[in-house]
Amino acid sequence: MQGNNLPSVSEVIALYKQSNIKRMRIYDPNQAVLEALRGSNIELILGVPNSDLQSLTNPSNANSWVQKNVRGFWSSVRFRYIAVGNEISPVNGGTAWLAQFVLPAMRNIHDAIRSAGLQDQIKVSTAIDLTLVTFTCQYLSLLYLCFNPRDISLPYALFTSPSVVVWDGQRGYKNLFDATLDALYSALERASGGSLEVVVSESGWPSAGAFAATFDNGRTYLSNLIQHVKGGTPKRPNRAIETYLFAMFDENKKQPEVEKHFGLFFPDKRPKYNLNFGAEKNWDISTEHMQQYFSLRVICEIVRI
Image (cartoon, helix red, strand yellow):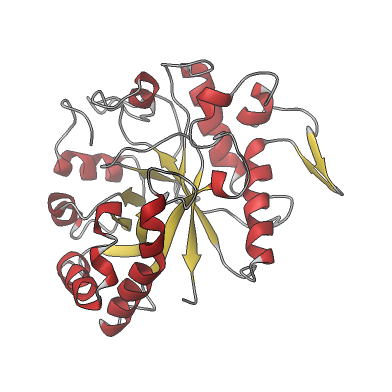
C-alpha cells in the first residue's frame, strides 16, 4: 500500500476475484481492508505489526486486539493465520530488542484465539527471515545486493538450471528455493519441530531497479515458482508448498528503488506478467503495509505453543 496511485481497497478485492486469487496477506489490521474482505471468501494472513508486540505481552491487550481485529470480523472474513511480528531477528540491531516479546505475544494471541473458540480455524505463528537459518549474507531478504556470479548463478535462482548445482549428501539441488527451504526444515528438526508445517509467506522478484531485476527475470521466476511449489522439495517431496507471491502492486513510495518494482500488477490494475492463478491450486499474492524486503520469507505454522 506504499504508493500514491494505487486502487481503492474495494477495487483490489474485485481484482483478486477477477484474477481467481484465493488468499491474501496483509501486514497490519487495516480496518478498511478487513471491511472490504467481508463476504469475499478470500482467506487471509493477518499480520500483527512489530510495533504492537510489546503491548501484546499483556494478556488483556492481546484479548482486546483479537476482539477488535478478529472477532469483530468473524465469520464474514476468513482468517487463516495470524502472523505475530514480521522478521524479528535477535541478531539484527534494528529489531533485536523486540525478540524478547515475540513468544509472549504469540502465546497471548493464541490464548485469546482459543478463548474465542477459534483455535481450530486460525493458526498463530510468526514470520521469519530465512537468513536467521541459512545465510550470513542476506541472499533472501536483499538478494539483489548479494547476487553475483561468484555467489549464486542466475539459473540456480530462477529455477532454470538444467542440472544439479549443489549436493547435500544424496540430495541434489537445482534451485536456491529448495536448498533454503530444506535448510529450514533441517533446522526445525534439530529444534524438535520437524512436524511443523511451513508456509512461504513471501516470494518475488523485482522487474527493475537493480542487477538482474528485469521484466524477463521476474516473469521467469514467478512462472517457475508457481509450477515448482506444487511438487515439494528434495527433503519433503510430493508435498505442495503453500506460497504467497510478493507483491500485488508496484509501490512508488518505497525505497530503495528496487523495492518499487515487485508488483504483479501495475497500479492501474493491468497485469505485469501473464501468470495463471487458475483453480487447480490457490496461488496467492501478498499485499503490504510495512517496509518489506526481497524474496523468500517463511511463516512457520505453530501447532503447539
